[in-house]
Length: 259
Image (cartoon, rainbow, N blue to C red; front, side, top):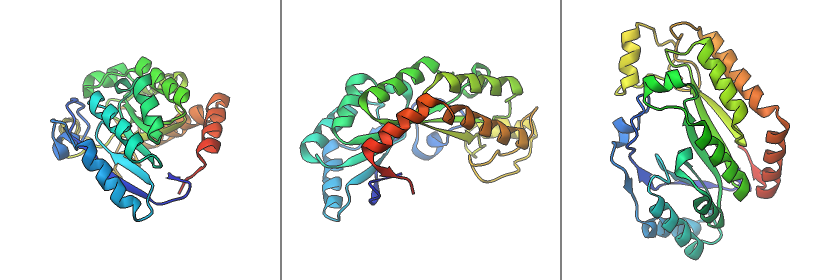
């Protein structure tokens, strides 16, 4: 997404995540300890980029609002020092609240991606991330209240996925109302616990297109069944009047163009 069709710059603002999700590559790449740049250094980089005509930013973070006070102080400093920017970021649903999102919106935030990921209790137990429907519902509703575009990521295609867990995913999606929904496929990245689980399952990796395509069959489902399930989940979400109405209002408000 490019707001107003303009150039967007990526600024790394935080790295590291303490959560134990077994499928995530962050621990291998960035470690478990969270490190944050100072708000002042971020503002200085933004101001330098503004001299080049850039006003749209992606604040890259493993979990942007992991440290609530840091995120709040950054938002308030942006309001003072960079009043005419627009930005997006990523975080977890349980890490936002009304005050935080209100300050984000005042500072130019127009979109947040939420790593919801797991929609089945059975899968959640195996990958160390239990589904949090209530937190997801509340985060999406807060985004609607504050005018922020909410994007939710969910994942299917874990080796333990079955027709029953995919049915759970569909019910989860029906009860969650983000503006945008993306369905990713679980991938066994080397260095993760899920990679070790995949190796033990004796299943073959049939695709190296990480997350865009199923890595392979599950223990009970084919890749074709997983792809059909993903399409069904997307139809379930995008063909609802409430979703279309909310997204249309926000598109008109923000006037963003997808590239």
